[in-house]
Length: 134
Picture 1 (cartoon, helix red, strand yellow):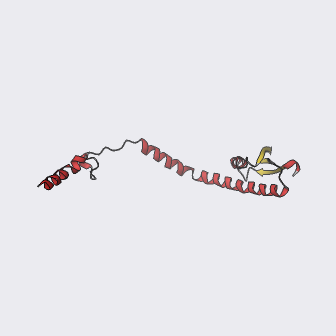
Picture 2 (tube, rainbow, N blue to C red; picture 1 turned 180 degrees about the vertical axis):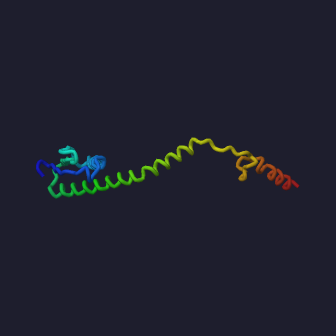
Picture 3 (cartoon, rainbow, N blue to C red; picture 1 turned 90 degrees about the horizontal axis):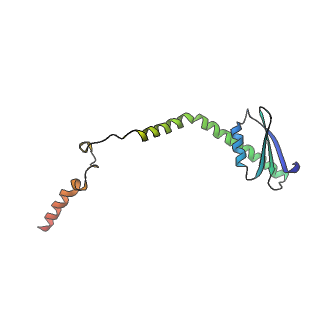
């Protein structure tokens, strides 16, 4: 690990560029990251430790980087596959929020929600008070 730097190439055929960016972002707290493109289908990743790192820890860091890269690529793939259903769900929610609610008359109110307290309980309460006085 010359100058505390680890370099390796990634193929953009295997890993989408967006997944590479997401993975690099995840590792910003542990290493300085440099990306280069030596060819159209390759990305050169250079990880430079923020502190002095032993060769064993660099090997572990690269393994963690590759695992996170697979994780990011999988999340992107799942996101692409579920894109249509997410759009349908959000679209339906927005349409439902915009559509005016159907007005219900008091006669169609089977639960009695639209009645006032007096309409619902007033007569019974008055009858109970009269019975107690007698």
